[in-house]
Length: 408
Ligand code: DP6
Image 1 (tube, helix red, strand yellow):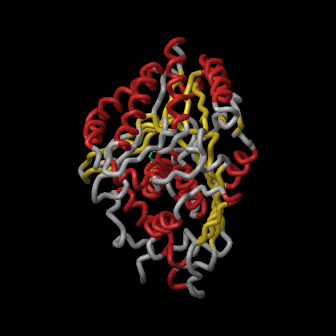
Image 2 (cartoon, protein in one colour):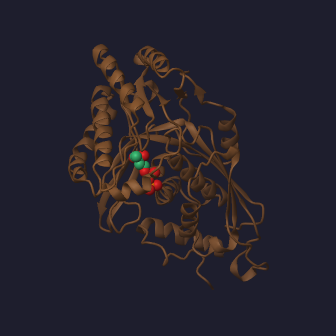
Image 3 (cartoon, rainbow, N blue to C red):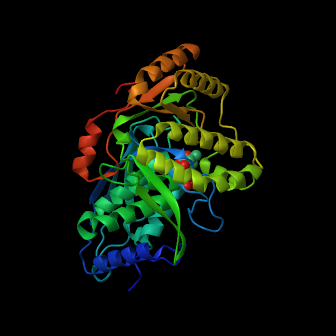
């Protein structure tokens, strides 16, 4: 009997994930998991914006970051993914039809929620072993936000894909809540590092930490929701100032490779353990002033590393600089509770508390005028984390949350 979840051709998995994969294999053999032509799975996942950034991977390891990171879940900016089984699929001894071939991916509305086909293929192979060869999946995926607007579309895209497969396999029935959460976070991480921070379910996942963890098995990571005793999630808002929506020249995967070539990277990473402790405490205490300092400092460090590597990566456009400088000047003068941050792109994310909503609105008005109408603003209200199943999918899809402007 062939090994359906073959793991030998993929980097070592952490023990707990290996265990869950072999449970899946057993369920597959004894017929508890049975896939047939036309079976479907659905999930929708949020994007996220890192406040402490993930940049650089451990050499020789698969998706182990050189530093821990923390993000804010962007529940309104989502990917919606449906997977459909093509070809018939039975337990090994009952298989009656030949495998029907490869997976195909469709991006609905031309908005790619998952950037690279090979990345997806690789993920599916790692998840399913040679089962992936046999079943063939059609993946339909769309984002409710423009892909080239500086949002991490691979984060929501990969998490939604992993979620849709979990729904297809009906893992909510087969795994405990904790095991399923772990399975979703780990496979999303394999798909794209930042996706693991988009893979948590339920309320209370507004702030997510993705942390390096040394245990008896060696170095792995843990993804967890961060509590805020001060109820920060209820007061927090976010928008993006899209100064340039052309696709970026250098993908972040290349940036991760180049990070170690910057002399500044070691300095940045050395300081991050303390910053992680401080930001987690600040989130817990609702100390937004400290979050502002830490997040802006880290955004600067990230771009300093990008600019000083073997190949210079400059994502910052002149308009980005002008807008950030003015934002900081006004914010500091007025002592407002608002911060800026940038990912691997020129577009400015603003995170702010309700009490500074008027300040952000005024700033956005000024920025629009300054950019002579070329600036696009995307904002949205809070919506949940990763959600599995058709019912959640349609319910959340019905709420068109992304707006051109600030609506809270
Ligand atoms: C700058 O998660 O896109 O957005 O793991 O190679 O898929 P891969 O990289 P990716 O990197 C994101 C980098 C970042 C910072 C962050 O989100 O933490």
